[in-house]
Image 1 (cartoon, rainbow, N blue to C red):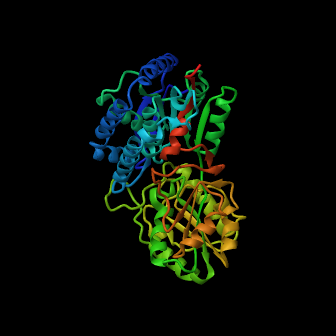
Image 2: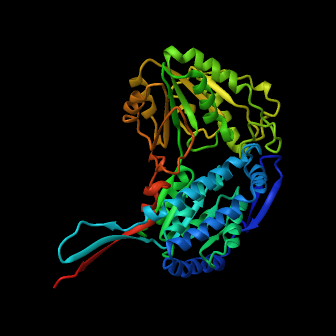
Image 3: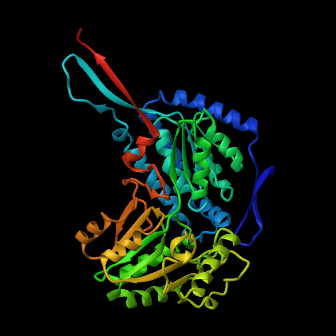
Length: 463
């Protein structure tokens, strides 16, 4: 087993940071410290929890520029967009702090003579958050803040590509005065992470990542009777109806496809367009795609950075080539993107037409800057195609008819249904998926339910 991790930056292929993996003794100490801290933390008031979490958020968002630069070096997001993740982190964190009092309130029961009854929401214990590299702060905050607000302790493991993100969050909580052991991070191998999942000192696992990663988490937790929340992959569809505002749809669907180089679980990966709008939409999105600037994420002019690693870019290249061989037509001349080069993570955006669901690019998660577009003749055909997937995280419809949007949304198998927007998490809404996109829920008042357990109080007051 390697003694440590090395972050190879997609910027130039150099080693950006190295860290040793946590030792078995360090892991054991972290689990013991978290257990001890949680017992004391559960007894604190909600106001004190909010004070600490707010101070940690304040400390984190006070250094946006350094976070943005580190994100660019670690995973390749253009520096011009990095502050969006810091802002999203703050939005979600403050919302979950603000709603905690209501979300965690006792459940009152109707009066019954001679009895007092209520249901209390109590913390689970120690929560193990396993976060990915593509949105390392946005995904981790979904469980960290509500877990702490609910009275749990948290141990964080970030992906090996973004270890500095875990360290920066720890620094924020440390500067806020967090009790020792309440919030910790560990740099772990996959085998070590599985052992932490199986530990009797872990009460809940919040995992965001790939489907194989989710399967590994479930296997590690099997037989231990603990909760596990999984936010996994996506092959999210967009349906552009004939009555859509095409200018708005083109601009926003393209952003949903290519933002973060397509490396978003809830990014748009397949598009269905009504025949009456098809030609105009295809022309519009192809023209807009040609305007992207592929280059170093450290350059403020760059609008499309490298993928996280060359192997990820090669995977998308293979999907695209297979589709073209099978009859798809590529609309973007990649020679217009000087940075696009085989054997590197720099990959030009691509729009494909004449595609079908027999092609991997329309059925298998791409997680890169490519999208296929199919023409449909009706809402029913679009619904059938949107549901023809093993995933179901988000889906969107682009239309001027809200009633039609609701009617179609009621038939689409998805965790979140959008009208005239995409690739966004509203912290007031439940973030969840169906099928191989996972299970469980984060954010919103509903998200607090899986980070607590109900405890019933049944007092007989008249004897």
